[in-house]
Every structure is written in C-alpha cells, then in structure tokens.
Image 1: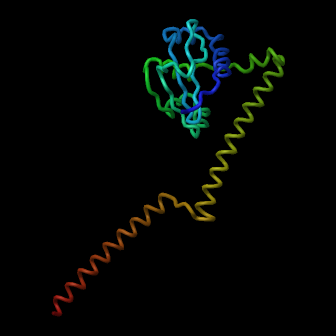
Image 2 (image 1 turned 60 degrees about the vertical axis):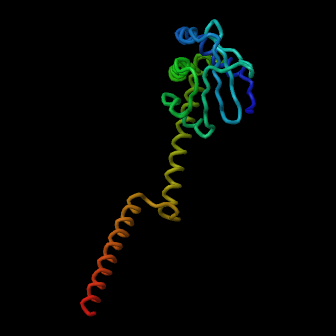
Image 3 (image 1 turned 135 degrees about the horizontal axis):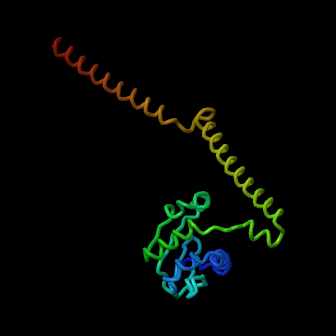
Length: 196
C-alpha cells in the first residue's frame, strides 16, 4: 500500500489561496464532504472539501471520490505549464469534481508579492519576486541550452543519435539498392535461360 503523506501543509497552503478567493471556495462548496486523492506513485495526498469550501485532511480509510495519478517524472512539466497540468495526469472517479479541481489548478494563483510584503515590506517583496522570476527564467534557459548542446554532441561529435532526415535518406537508399539487386538477379536469370 502506498503511504499516506501528511496533507496538513498542502491543505494549509491551498486554504491560504482559497481564503483570498471567494469564487474558488464557491466552486468547491457543491463538493463538500468529497475526498480527492493525489497519488504520486510513492505517496498519496488525501484532501476533503469542508462545508465552508476549504480543505481538510482525509483519513486513509475514507473513500476518495476522485483519484489523480501523477508520475513524479511529469512534475516539472506540470509546474512549467499549469494550463495543461491535467493533460499529464490520469484521473478516476467523479468527473464533475475532477473538472472543478482542474479549473482551480489552472486559475488559482498565489500572490507572492502580497504575502511577502506583509513580512518584508513592499519594496523587498517586489525585488524578491523579481529575483525568483529571473532565477526561474535563467534555469529554464539553461535547461534548454543543455538539451541543445547534448543533442548537438550526440548528433555531431559522438554520433549516438541520427537526424530523422538522415534515417529517411538511408532508408530510401536501402530501398533503391534492394530494387537494383532484384533487377540484377532477374537479368542474370534471363541471361542464364538464354544460354541454356
């Protein structure tokens, strides 16, 4: 059985976001009492919708109405593209509840500047968020450059990969050679019949 992770920190963070957005709580209200299980292969998060539209921990013995299966290898893709997050997961259960969760995952945003400004002041919060965005952008650009450099290395300098055009060209040449060999065999057979 997959271990159940403590959901309190996740519920606390999501509740912080929900507390700032009444529209989001209103979307969850029709699903009060329902449980969502997020299965991360190595552990599960189980969250229950409370009567006020916020979330609370759900016990392992309570039946989940929707289960969202997430591969750990897909987490970076999900983080990069929240609008398409649900295209990377497998969902079982209550379709309406799953659609509500999907909608909230796309539209609920953390206003980091606002929260940080309460702790550090407005100017520091703006700079911290700007630095974090810059760092994120640099990390994405570095990741892209590393991928491009590795691809170039394995294609050009240490050919372990082959470009699709080269494979297509090779395949065309093999087919042409096969046809030429078949024609040659038929000519040889024809010449042998003429001699014999």
